[in-house]
Length: 205
Figure (tube, rainbow, N blue to C red):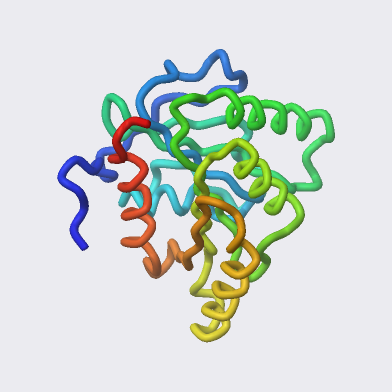
């Protein structure tokens, strides 16, 4: 399926800024899609793969590297947003609480937020904090698309079984969809872009 005529060109994505407070965010206008997930779930790698750029979002083998909200412009009115990862036990408690407050404020107050891409390692899906974010998105009526990342790490049958199990658990959550994804071999790339296109090209509510 071809992309809509007004879909963004993800290859043109560029870094805008990192913020530690909501007041530092770009003007709350246009359309944003936020990427969320546990530390080391593959948020930065997914953003890089979707945008066809190897170094757009900084990646690290050290969980918890993304400590601020990072904004990437697709054009003058559409943005991707990389949220700080959660669930990394070695981060000092006060810093972890500060990150939580920042993300909570962003999700609750950001009017330009059109949807959340929730990334979960397909080998360890639906941890407690993942479920918390799913409930949070549902409470705020924010559409959610789940990427089960690192699908190349599992046999095809096992990955498909995990996909079906996660879909069953989330079947009653409104506006929530689930797919397999691999930044390494490109599994699910077209599907992920198509879902983003839907959010970025939807008519204003």
